[in-house]
Image (cartoon, rainbow, N blue to C red):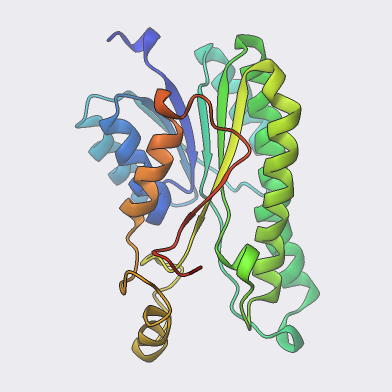
Length: 246
């Protein structure tokens, strides 16, 4: 398959965790990649792994909260004359009780998880509308629907992505753009490495499959959403939580 005919995916948060696993998954599926993250060294390592699968990989180091940098990113991406998939994995978790969460922390959460997500979808959909085809995959969380004590700020901002996903699916469907989200449960990434063994054991007891999920568990579902097999799916929030919701 020539580079010109390969699907192109833009992945944010691609330097580690679910984003890195997704980059490898889509590389295996034969996609060309634009990988975005803040850590250039980790990003370079991920890019090299993806190139081993035959993917053309472009890396961009930037802060997604900088709206001007995002505009420049898409101006450069426009030169590719193709964008098939946006997978937005970048983000961070805030574990803090309501009484201890500052308004500045809340604002930062909303900037990265909602404002940046909104702008990414806006810019990506402009490119995709021209080709009347595209796929947006957002990263929500199980706590968006179940809630979590000590994560009121984080769960509320993740819940906002549900409304965004459903609304965009209705708005962009007529121009051939699908919009879905995945909602992971307890996944072993840098976001959960601060959990004590006692807390992990407590959470595992609530999971039907009795194990912590791996980034690859989520990446494979994202890979499905980016594949032709999911061509008639839009407006879905797919739980990847090992049965935590049962």
